[in-house]
Image (cartoon, rainbow, N blue to C red; front, top):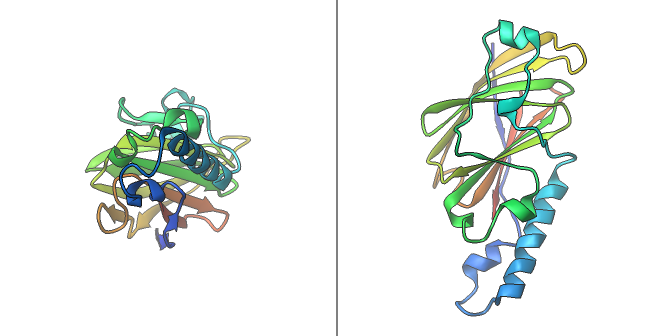
Length: 194
């Protein structure tokens, strides 16, 4: 069984001013203030940012029995404090993926970046932030739900219409936010222009 992915609009954050201001108009202090403001806005979007590196999480037995493993490229940075881990120098060269879990269950999500399959585990009520080098495409593939208290498998769905392309759905320097809510396998995508 599959579910379609709902696509929401773009949300522009304060840092867009950096790339549109005439050269020399923003000094170092103003730039740092803008970065802090954007970091605060991103952190305010989420109730709780997941601090656990998904590569180190012990998956529930039923997830392991289903053959699920966490797969993330080793050069991907897990973002736990936006203001400290993202710098203006790297903004134009990154794609920030955010997996926001509001589903009421722990989630195992399989996706691909530039054709390479990845998979993460996101705790209920938390948002996992991953800093990739600029991506050409992101595709959501599958979502599986597990009881957050017992680890028992609840349900799984293939995610349809889950392909997001650079220069169509997002650009380098954007955050792509996938929100999984209590209605099941529906994902809301909100590219955030940094």
